[in-house]
Image (cartoon, rainbow, N blue to C red):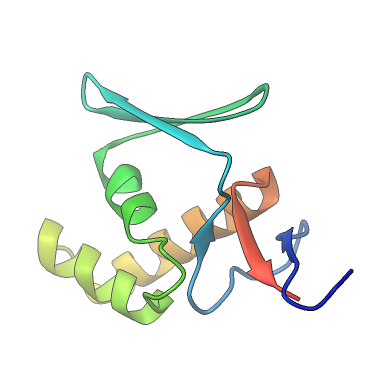
Amino acid sequence: MSAGTKRAVAPGEAAPPCPRREIDVRTYRGGGATFLVQRIDRYRTNEVGGYIWSLCDGETPVDDIENAVALRYGIDPGLARSGVRDFLSDLGRCGFLIRPD
C-alpha cells in the first residue's frame, strides 16, 4: 500500500483516535433513524448513532465525540464513553470507518 492510502478498520481493531467515515458510504435519515449504505452493505442506527456518525470527520478525537454525546443527550460521561467506543468498534468491523496506515 502506498503512503497515505487508507484501509478499513480490521475486526478486533480499535477505532482510530479521530475516526473518519469511508468516502463511499451514503447516509440517509428518516423516521428517527440513520441508514448507512456502502455498496451492498447497510447499517441502521438510531438518532444517537447518527449524531456520532456525523462527528466521524477524521478531525474530531474520540474523547471529544464522547463528551459531545454526554452533553447533547444528558447522559453520564462513563456511559457515553462505553457507548461511543462500542459503536465505533462496530462501525469499524462493518467497514464503515477508515484509518491511516
